[in-house]
Image 1 (cartoon, rainbow, N blue to C red):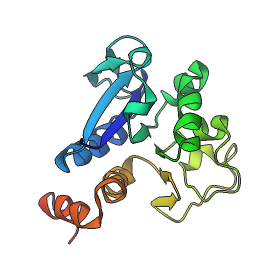
Image 2: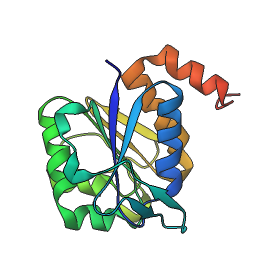
Image 3: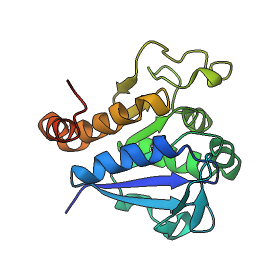
Image 4: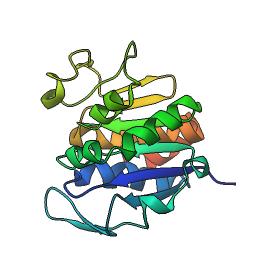
Amino acid sequence: MSTRVLCLLADGFEELETIAPVDVLRRAGVAVTLASLGELPVTGRNDIHLTADVRLSDELPDAYDLLLLPGGPGVAKLREDGRPAALARIFHESGKRVAAICAAPLVLKDAGILSGRRFTAHDSTLRDLPDAIVNERVVIEGNLITSRGAGTAVDFGLALVAELCGQERADEVASSIHAYL
């Protein structure tokens, strides 16, 4: 059985923080399902349109190994909806990995899983996340993987591959896309 990732999308998602990690994961052979909070067509912050694979209401968390939350203005919709925070809590409590980039760690705060943990997030969230580490591109603590923003999206994707498939596979993907000099 292949490793499976559930990536949640809402209108206003940050395109780089979605596409880069999803692409890197798929290059590593990980099955990634894009799930929309609502309709299948979803529009990113820069007016790039994606068609999600499924609606979130159609998915069961036990079918996945990792929950992926991209950032961007769409995080406000993820927070308003409530299901993403509930899913993050379910994944976390069952020992599965939870990954969030940019503003998406705010969803993890809502889920109650950041307290006492090392994590990072976008500078714009520091008022709400004053404990965020600001000098690391990706922070991994246990089953929690966080990253700073669009500029760290490939590093984030490679960290996800390393966590799910091992460092050797992450290095192979990194080499194939010239991520390391």
